[in-house]
Image (tube, rainbow, N blue to C red; front, side, top):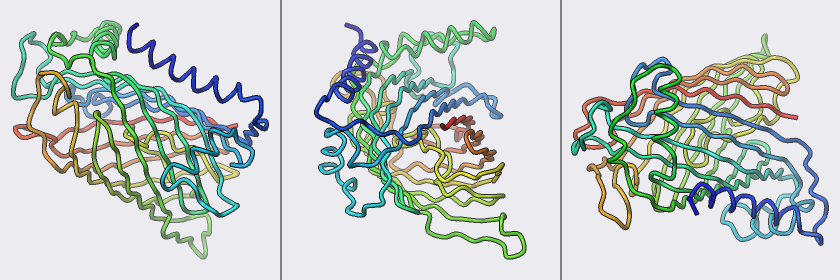
Length: 340
């Protein structure tokens, strides 16, 4: 059985368990959000290297914990950070499906490029649990997937290149080998400060802080970051996010009754212990490079939001991720969220 089918089977089994628990109360989903995030280094960057494409589809539904199925209540109790005693916590449960693609700079040659990062694809499914109380968000995301040919990175990239009449990447024979991937992420976010204008109360500024721990054979790192937002009718949420562990899935929450818009600047620093896309396969010999222990992102973005729809564009500037990397990387991120 190929790994993509395994991923689909795992997610389907999890969903079946949720739906099939006859003893559980009816799951009361008060609202739900579907989010699509696409990232590419062609978006206002014009490159085609390193982290070259990402796609993540996420569904999240909001419910009360005591109206959730027993497996959700049990998970909230046993997972660190997810068992708050306050009765007003709002819970969201959901699923995601995503794919990331990585290539070296020179995609014309078929030869292995030893001093540049490996070709790699990462195809995964995630189960997500979030808890929010006013200005605090706690989330956990468990991702299961595959790194290697079964992640379909070569097929997705080259067929898309054929569609837009761009030269194919020719070195995929050197990609990382098939390996099952596990990634478990805990994250907290805080809206620590807000300001509203006195003469223009719809004008606002706020500050969101976050910290995260990710464990697994795909990524192991600790991260911290901050977001500053300035705009018209700022929503009481935590803003859009990039495709990363725990990211790319923040739903519309407490959004404006009318049109709103804002700009934002975001930063994050990660202490990296493991990155399979640089370190190479865990249990097999493969191409690898010498990664840097600290990586930082600076993001600048623009958001337009209506009561049930949000559009976000972000330009991300990432520091060098491995020794010998000649230039930092830039990529764009486009996100659409629909709520009902």
